[in-house]
Length: 376
Image 1 (cartoon, rainbow, N blue to C red):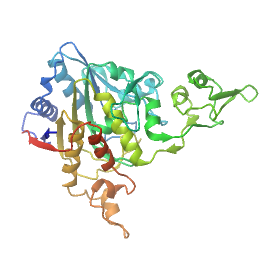
Image 2: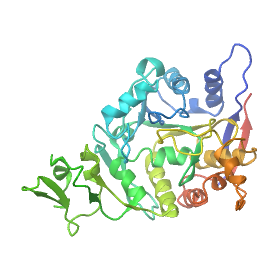
Image 3: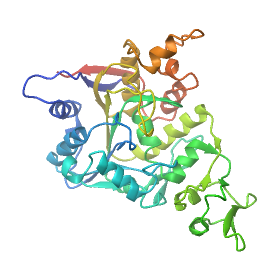
Image 4: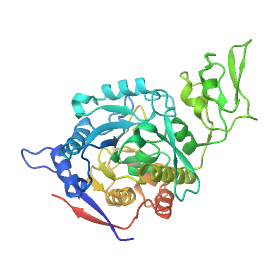
């Protein structure tokens, strides 16, 4: 496979030109206008930020991308799927309120906002994974798969499990429905907290395998483990967070599943990817708080290859000096610190990302061999 082209621009601007303008120039130089968008639905997948978090990408950048799509004749919409965990984005109503509060509205971004897996996170479609070793059919938000063209707009940052969150995580984990996220994150079958169960029986309606039993006396639901297949559909139906999957998949397996989900999303249609390496927080934007950046702002990157894009962003980050008064510098000053020669793994010892990049290349998602092209 020949080298992928990754285009890069720093965050320095000249008088009279803002960063959104520079981002538009970058993605045009990277070839986004090679995609025929005339009259096509274009999904722009991004993270709207959890309430309380301030490190997510600002709406100005989303508007810049949406404006370019409209210039090219496309019909853009911003999208994300509901979260598996309790928070402010676990159903479409709360998710939209969260997005609005964080500044993402049709007026501020210049296009509609759609939650990809519907009201309760159950509106998904099974998508075959060509060459998948862990996932044969990925559960992807229906609105995302209905789009003709797919664009990922990523905030590149650290992550407490996968080392960093970039294009592959934004696509693979982010485009999975609630059941899809469960399939990536967890092994085994659910447990039900009877104290949180309201006896509404909505979860039972989603179960196709008689895996849930309702007790008429206690008015509580329970899991029938002999029938349950661990599909995760019940999670999306429960509005009270009474159902959870306690057995997390090992990081390596999570990384591989995430890469395979990404391949399911991008295969067979035009796709383009953008990452902004800024406000590099140590943890995911899914947190309802954020810590000080562990690295300085690096720049904006764009490519047709999500794997090459992630590799280029990692390489750029590893060349940086850690920020003082950050979690990374704090870890490095600890008495028993062992240098792993990697800023992300030094920040969170048990995190790991190399298996994700290796598996992504193995299954044909892209290449880690890239040419970096600077755009002024």
